[in-house]
Each structure stands twice: as C-alpha cells, then as structure tokens.
Image 1 (cartoon, rainbow, N blue to C red):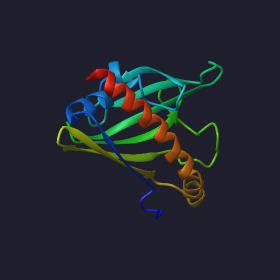
Image 2 (tube, one colour):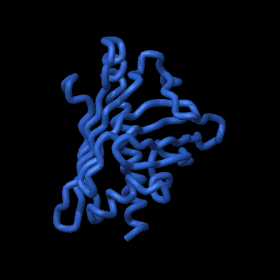
Image 3 (tube, rainbow, N blue to C red):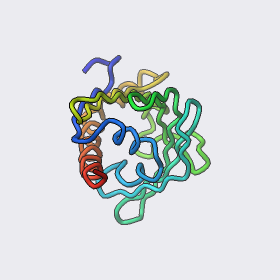
Length: 166
C-alpha cells in the first residue's frame, strides 16, 4: 500500500449497479447499512450533487457514544461514480478533529466506482488523506488496516441490505 494510494478496497455485490448506486445516494437507504457493525446511523441531511452535503450521526450499540460526520460531494456520475470528501463534524456540519486521534486527517478523499458485470456490481473504493500533514499521513497509514477491516463489516451489511432490496 503506497502513501499516494491510501486505501484501495474492491468488492463484488450480487445486485445491479443502479441499485448499488441508489443505496449509496438515497437517504431512505443509506442509513440502513452504512457504518460500523452494530452502530445506527441517523441521516440529518443528504444532498447528493457536486457541492452538496451528507450529514449524519452514528450511535454506538449501547447508545452511549455519538459521532457526527459529513461528506461533501465533489463528483456524482449516476450510476458509476461518486467522489466525496469525508470528515468528522459537529451537528452543524463544521469539520472537527476525530474523537479517537488528534492526528487523524481532517479530510479524507473517497472515490467510489461501480462497474456492471453480468447483473452484478464490482465496487472499488479508494480513499486517502487530503491536504494532510506528515503526522496526519502517518496516523492514517497506521490505522489503514483497521479502517479496511471496518469497511469489511460495512460491506457485509451492504451485502445483506442489497439482498433485502432485490
């Protein structure tokens, strides 16, 4: 894994590309599967267009911990591509430091591509720090394996959710 590349995750889903795109961009769907296993997600707003914002609050299974986060969309090409900058935030959508690490990058650039393959969808997600200091890059690199593992859980939830929508 090179520093420039950041995270690179690839996963195949047994669902048509249009549906996979829809569950990433429709607030009625997104809150049902996004996030760490066991966490709930409350979507405060979701405006999927260049310059638009997603704002949501994840709550831990015990309800004791709540973390706000936002996406600012840069590129939206239905149904094949989404580009967004992801940050931790307060409930107003102001960018804040990650609660778990003061050196976590303030902004992560994510590039999601969806390829149709005989009724199935190949998802590629690439993500890495944007405008990061050396300390922030280091923190990201150190946690990348954990982040990748977290996405495995999220993609597992997405797999089950897509199956329920077919």
